[in-house]
Amino acid sequence: MNNLNLNNKLMTLLLIASFFLIGCDKKSPEWEYFPDMYDSPAREAQEYDPTAPNKVGGRLPVEGTIPVEYTPYQLSGPNLDDQRVKDLKIPEGIKLTELNLKRGETQFQVFCYPCHGPQGEGNGPVIGPPGGGKFNYSPNMNIHGTYAYLNDGQIYHVITNGNGQMPAYASMISEEDRWKIVLYVRKLKETYVLLAQAKTAPAENAEPKKDGN
Ligand code: HEC
Image (cartoon, rainbow, N blue to C red; front, side, top):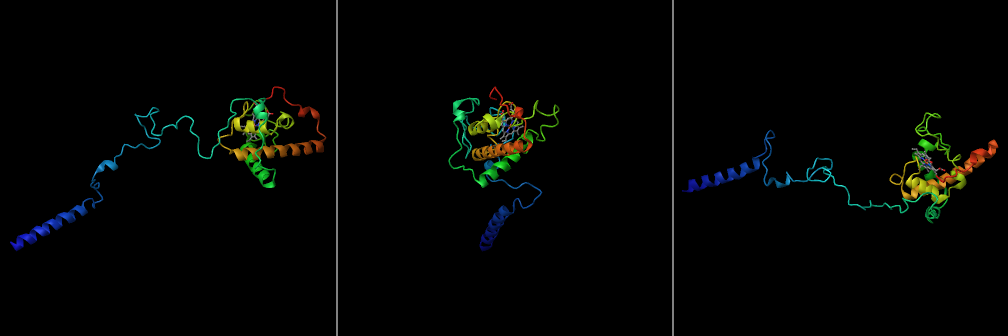
């Protein structure tokens, strides 16, 4: 009787031990206890999902969703002649300091240089040789009269919204940096005037465009 009891105990121990040994053999899949969590119905972002309206695991954000730290631009419709655009002012906090100007310069050289060139003269690498470039004319800020007739708000508007053939940069450059670029574009104007004086430049290049674009 005693012996049988011992045998029973041994058998129970063996059974419990074997429980822990299941799945130790790496060649076979591990024993799944409650497999629900392993095979959840969740989809990866790029995965095919027949139940989604766009058939992709990642859903589009609800209309009107605003990313964190992003300020929507209220004037995406109107053109450069709109009074609300002209009335836009550089925020109080963004002063004409060396640091802000430097930031404007680096941002200009990253985002604007490819087309407008280092001094805004429209000779960036994307533009290419005259007649053979991406655009049908070179976006020379001097010739198009940016310095002469666009105020700070209008330049900010062009960067934010794009203009004609120029794409919008609102999604790539923060609001603050866009204003710092405006500071730098203003600085380019001074440089341009100085260069022009040095060359005793002809006045015909400075004629503003009439259509406001
Ligand atoms: C992909 C090329 C490209 C890039 C990059 C680009 N622009 Fe432009 N930009 C243009 C073109 C082309 C025009 C002329 C638009 C038109 O009238 O169709 C223009 C026009 C402008 C004008 C208005 C000039 C006028 O009087 O019509 C301003 C101001 C300006 N760009 C500033 C900037 C600034 C600042 C950046 C950098 C944030 C920038 N652009 C980046 C191509 C570019």
